[in-house]
Amino acid sequence: MRFAIIIPAAGASSRMRGSDKLLEQIDGVALLRRQSLRAAETGADLFIVLPMDSPRADAVRDIPHTQITVETTGLGDSLAAAFAQITGYDAALVLLPDMPDIETADMTALLTTYRNDTRRPIIRASAGFKAGNPVVLPGWSFAACRTLSGDKGARDIITSNTDRTRLVPLAGNRATLDLDTPEDWATYRAT
Image (tube, rainbow, N blue to C red; front, side, top):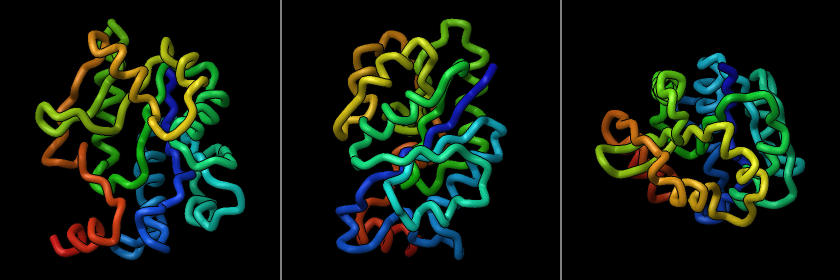
């Protein structure tokens, strides 16, 4: 099976009040770079969606990936642009780059679960029974993904296919922890 990993990294970081959350560092590494390296380690083909003329591109320049550049910052717009580039893949894992605790092993487990489930469901990471991210979107959903827009991402596709969605628990709260504000970062760094 051929898998793609999409990192939608074109968001405006508006809740950071002037800082770029994806360029904030953890252990001396920008968050976007850290998560992109982890994604690349899965062996899946990596697609990173970035805004025009962004310093974020420097953070991932030497990581093998296909860069997709967009003018809008909505998650749905970013996903539509990425899925327009993806052909010949069985499924795509969408990795939100502001989720610092998602590891290579988590992504591999989600992709392996998809590979082993002949029903080809949507695979969604969870913290216990609370749905989270990343999400593996099957090939049968790609056409709908290409029509996404705005900032909702693939939420409507997932909610309209709950009978075709399988939750896969990840350790702790890693499937629901994201860092959107300076306060989120301060709390994360304090733990």
